[in-house]
Amino acid sequence: MNARLPRHLLTALAATAVLTTLTACSDTAGDTASAAEDKQHTVAGVTIAKDKALHDALPEAIRKSGTVRVATDVPYAPFEMFVAEGKPELTGLDYDLGQALGAKLGVQFAFTPQKFDGIVPAIQAGKFDAAMSAMTDSKERQAVVDFVDYSVSGSGIMVVKGNPAKIATLSDLCGKKVAVQAATNQLDLLKEQQPTCKAAGKPEIEIQTFPKDSDAQLALRSDKVVAQVQTKPAAGWTAKTADGGNAFEVVNDPAAGGGYAASPNGIAVSKKLPELSDAVQKALQSLIDDGTVTKIFDKYGVASIAVKEATKNAGAN
Image 1 (cartoon, helix red, strand yellow):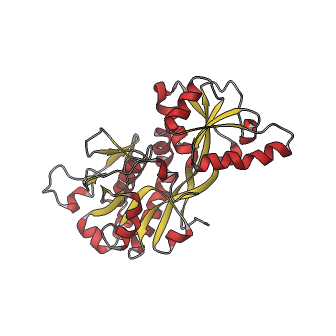
Image 2: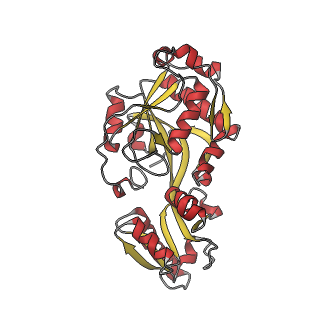
Image 3: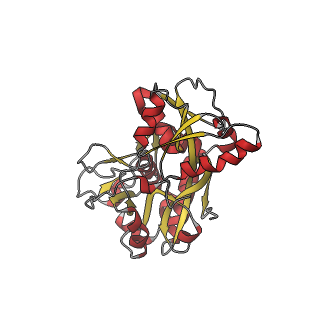
């Protein structure tokens, strides 16, 4: 799995470091953190109030400032996006989850755009306390940051609405025309499936590669292929939003709920702030238990990749 669900597919974003607070905890700049932290917030239709015990467990510096400094690389739909091109306001799954965690902890989660490959070094340097940027929890990264895992995701299969080819699993793609973007993990996945097709006595997948994901999507729209393989979060978001949700649907294989070759994604937290990672883990579990996390993920069409338990450093590779 790449460092992040194929981050190399995106062009580099030369973003100015614009501070965007996820929990609008004060109406004016002069409001104090103590007044702000007692407000309730609504995220994905759920009203969330501060948990005093979790707030009190935060590092002293964060309690005093009322802010968790969070790095994120924008855009990477559906995890982080700009509300409008050229505007600093953020939206997306990580945005909403950050809002919810901030509300539960009684602090602001203040997001600053940061180029992806510079996020971990910036945390190590003390510029940020944490990162929410669809970051894969890996053994290599665990050496320098701690992860609170909130999703497990890999590759997914998208078909046209109604699924006329009746695709249910990866093996159903054998002998069929399938679109995929070139030079991606998803192309590797399809190539790795070919021996399985042969062993089952089926023809190989007729893989059609395209330079851009949008080109592969067009091939699916025009019935040149029966399916498109891409990251499951991207597939879910596209199915949710394209033509008002009427163009595509995602195949949900029960044997691969988070997608094929799935790996955990986590909130990266500075190793210098163990109290913060502990508090975030407990806040996340509380939001899982009360159904808030499911509603946030479902808002972006990716409920299947949400974890049922908030683990720490679960990445095994």
